[in-house]
Length: 246
Image (cartoon, rainbow, N blue to C red; front, side):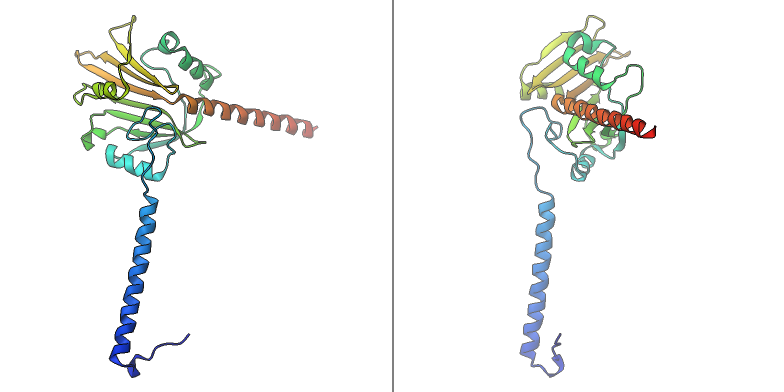
C-alpha cells in the first residue's frame, strides 16, 4: 500500500485528498442510514380479518413489533409455553353460544383436567393506562411455530373511549347475545372465519367491565394440527426405542 506524502505535496493536492475522504465518509453514512431505514419498513396490515394496533392474523411476531407495542402499551411481561384456554365469561359459555370455539378448546386442552402446555409466546401488558390508553389488561398470544397471532384479550372498565362504537363503525352491526345466566351480554363479529367477541358485565358497584376477545381460528387450528403431528412422531420414536431395547 502506498501512502501519500503530504509534507512534499502542494496545498491543492492536500485539499483534493481531504475533500475525497470527507465525501467517502458521507457516502458510507448515507448507506448505513438507508440500511437502517430498510429494517424498519412499514408492515402490511391484514384487512381480511380483525386487527389490534395493526396486528392481524398474518402478522408475524418480531422484536420490531414488540418494540412498537412497548411504545403504545408500556413494558410487557413475556411467557413462553403456556396453557391456552379459550373459555370466557363462565364455564359453558362457548358450548352454548359458540360450539365451533368449544370444539377447538376441547382439542387444545386434552386430556381434560390436566395441564396442557403449548408452544406459544404470550405478551402481557398490565400498566397500559400509564401510556394514556384505556386498557386495564392486554394479553396477546402468538404461535411458537409460525409466530402468527392466535388469541388476543383486551380488558377495560367503562367505555370512555367509545371503543364499542368504533368497532361498530369498522365492522358493522354485531350480533348480540343476552345471557340467560346473568346480567351480562356479548356482541360478536365473524370475519373470514375469525371471531371478535365483546362481553359486558356489571361489577359489584354497578359499573361495566368490558372484555374483548379475538380468536384467529385458522392459526389456532394450525397449532392443533402441528402439535398432533409432533405427538405422533414422538410416539413412533418411543415405539422404535422399545423395539431396540429388547
